[in-house]
Length: 168
Ligand SMILES: Nc1ncnc2c1ncn2[C@@H]1O[C@H](COP(=O)(O)OP(=O)(O)OP(=O)(O)O)[C@@H](O)[C@H]1O
Ligand SMILES: [Mg+2]
Image (tube, rainbow, N blue to C red):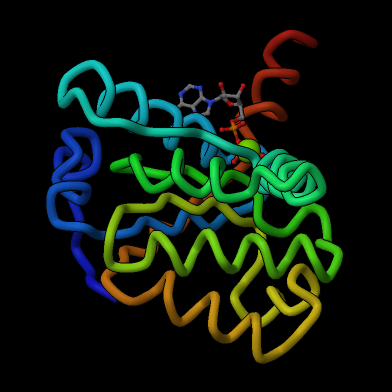
């Protein structure tokens, strides 16, 4: 993974032009969703990029639903049109087998063809708990980390800090 990335590089969407992924790793309330949303909004407004923001569970539920209705290829076509796919929250909720496989298909489809931002509270070593299968997990991680930047969110939860301010 590349090092030494600047805020300007992220916020002005250069990683999208360069076909790179961002992995936001950190504890609860540290700003992963906030920054991914900000980058997504910038990409739409300033760069006129096509982006979509999903929570992982939201996307997996849509994929499962589409699979049941026989409209999976339509969902895949919509994803194919994007420049940037944001997948928020890998880690909080384990996926069922079919959901994990469908998510893998989306990640494979995006691999080397569009940028992804993935947010997670789990180290890669624990992703197995989400995907449920070590080979699938390895294949997912391998695709995501190729051409990617890992950004670690340290510090206390913004939510926690805010609640302390209100309680003063
Ligand atoms: N840089 C920032 N400046 C001001 N407020 C922020 C900043 N980053 C995050 N926040 C606020 O802090 C709260 C928590 O941020 P966020 O939801 O992005 O955390 P998270 O890392 O996604 O947490 P979780 O893992 O629980 O989903 C939100 O209300 C958000 O608006
Ligand atoms: Mg979040």
